[in-house]
Length: 209
Image (cartoon, rainbow, N blue to C red; front, top):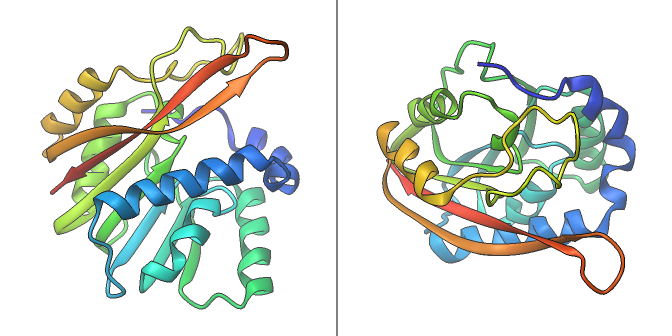
């Protein structure tokens, strides 16, 4: 099971990641989707996997007691640490972690969420099994990612998944042990200039352990 692309790709983009207003809008839309479908509680301990600069967790931070933010990119985590310090946040804790290659943490979480991360992981089934193992019972998994697309989102040379078929991903999640799996569309990204840009829907999969 490998993670694609390398951390160097994300390290090089970390300092300008938050300059894209679409990334902020996407994170806020996903956060609202999570709030509307998961009974969040100020006692919950959460894990964001593939956190980047933490845009999604900053949106959910007031709703949760403790958030662990995991990413394999030191550059992204450095920017995240600066933002946490600058904002005086006391319940967000970054950590360098790659669930593909590193041992699973000893902690368990009431909520695990990710945004645009799963399509970078070649072994989707293995990753979902790892996330299931990290969840407390009862617990919730929320995965936001691309619907199946023609490869134009990333362009030539990308070796990850070109989005996901919802039925197939739901079946994979069920095989990993999840139940009550449901999908909603929470955001739409557009790429391309002119009158007919390409639209890429982003789904939110919510599942329960």
